[in-house]
Image (cartoon, rainbow, N blue to C red; front, side):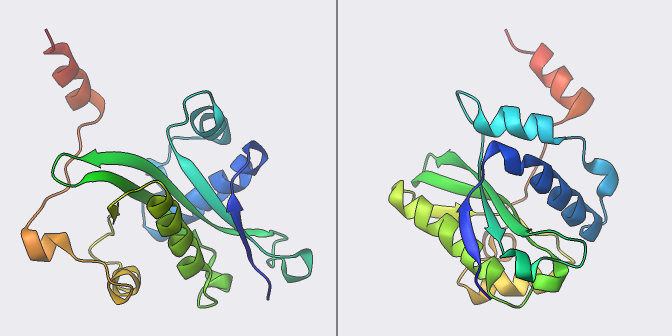
Length: 171
């Protein structure tokens, strides 16, 4: 089966939104998704994009049971390490269940890595839920290091009232 990995376009945002929800259901957190294709379009395709995205597309003759040709995506953005320099953070890597095991996830992640190297990034970082052993095993098999186990890092977040309160403390 021929698979095309390409940069997302604004018109892909409805399909990306669909797959974000599919991923959230898989991760048992569908109620956490508060974004729509409109925010995806604004934030990824405006004058100062906050993220980049790749989509995996199959020909129409291989469309999904429900008629989809966009069957996976990788969403990533740039960050910076004060110790190492340029870094890419891969927020999501998703392939629809009926297309898993066909090399699509590997192709998406390898393309993110290629983009990172072209931008002179020294790291590709991501997080994975502790119960998601298939994904963790996939990343480890590709050479990822588990920093929780190796270095003891915790991934923290401020949001909602906590973020509001912190921002109000600014001089």
